[in-house]
Image (cartoon, one colour):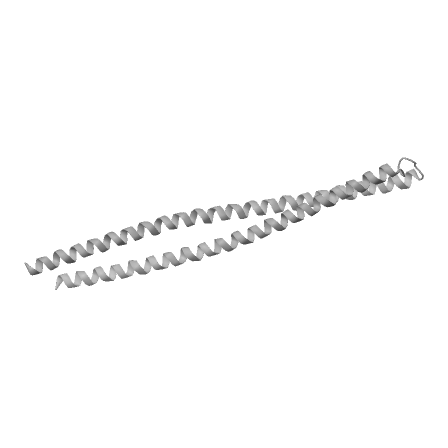
Length: 162
């Protein structure tokens, strides 16, 4: 009966350890799923930031082209009109200056937005690298625990055969 008690105790201990390992494995699986969701969110945010950057670059290019065309047209008009009282009026000159100021403000705002997006993208990239490192570490630890459990089971099986 002493041998059967020891066998029951070791079976009970093995069952407890197995349940603990299963709980750990389940917890690691849940953490892994959460990390994967966060990785996907970070990738989506990075893609969104890149798309915004491209849209802003395209806007800047279009804006510069249009601005240059308008500037050329005004220069042609100025040379063609000579001493045009309307073209030389203070009102037209102030309206042009105001428009230029508005455009400059818009360019500054877009540049600030671009810097902000780049900074946010860098932060998200850093967080993503951190989570990926953590994920690799969790997988490594899980594999080590699995190996230990297999060795333990093999040792127990060898001990039970003796």
